[in-house]
Length: 393
Image (tube, rainbow, N blue to C red):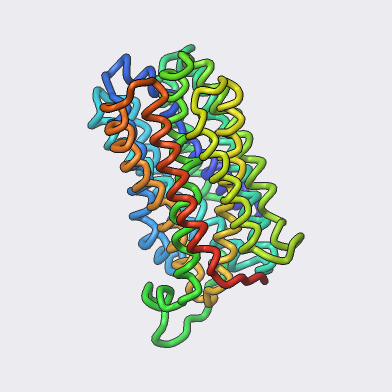
C-alpha cells in the first residue's frame, strides 16, 4: 500500500506540473507558434474543466473499479497522449486539445490517494495525509518553474515536453503494477447516488469556498505570473522561472503547514477561514500597488500561494460529513467544485485581462483588474464559509 501511495504521489507531481507549466512556456509558445495570452488562458481553463468534468465518473470508478486501474489507464493513455499532442502543436488549437487530454489523464491521481486514505487510515489524520500528498506533489510546481525554463531553453520546448510524455507513460505503467486497491465499503441499500451527497446541507456552505480558494494561486502561478512579469518588469524566461519557483515553494510549505493545524487548534473551519482571509489581503496589496517592486510583488504572490494552500483542510472538513460507502464519490464531488472553479476562473480571467487591456493606460492595469477579480471572488467565498458548521474527527 505504501509503495502504491508513493507512485500516486509521483503521478500527482505530474498533475501539478501540467497545470502550471504554461506560465513558463508562454513567451516561447507566443514566439514560436503565435499563441496569445488569452488563448493560453483558455488552454489553462480547458485543463481544469476537463479535469473537473472527469470527477464524477472518476468517483464512480474509484468506488466500483478501484484506484489502480482507474488511475493507470487514464494517466497513461490520456496523460501521455496529451503530452505528445502538446509537443507536436502548431497553433492554439493543438495546445487546447493537448490540455484537455492532460486534464483527463491527471483527473484521478489525487483522488485515488484521498480515497485510499479515507478507506484505510483513521479519519483524524486525513487532513495531515492529504496535505502531505499535495505538499510533495507540489514539487511538480517547482519543476515547472526554473527547471522547465532551463530545459526548454537548452533543448527546446518540444523536446522537453516529449521527455515528459515518456515519464508520464512510465509512471502509469508503474501505477498499474504497484497500486493496491483498498477494501470496499459495504453499501446501504437504496443509497449511493450523487443526490445523496447533495442532500448533506452542511456541504452547501463549504462548497463555495472550495470553488474559489485555489483559483487565485492556480490562476496566477499557472498562467498570469509570466505575462505579468514580462509586461510590468520586463522579465525573461529565467526571471519568470525564479518568481514562479518562489511561489511554488510557498505553495509546498503551505500544504504541509495546513495539514496538522486542525489537530493543533481543534478546528478546521477557522484555520481555513483565517488562511484564506490572509490570501485576500495579499491580493488586495497586489491590486493596490502592482508595480511596487520586482521582489515585493514576488513575495505577495508567494503569500497568495502560501495561504491559498487550504484545499486539504477544506477537503477534510467536507469529507467529515460523508458516509463511508460514498467516500469516492464524495471526495471527487469536492474536487469537482475545487478544480471546476479554477477552470471557470481561468476562462473568465482571460476575458478580464482582455477587457482591461483594451482600456488600460499602463502596463500594470490589466493585472490590477486580475488581482481585484481574484480577491473579490475569494472574499465572497470566505463570507459564505463563515456560516458553515465546523467539524473535526
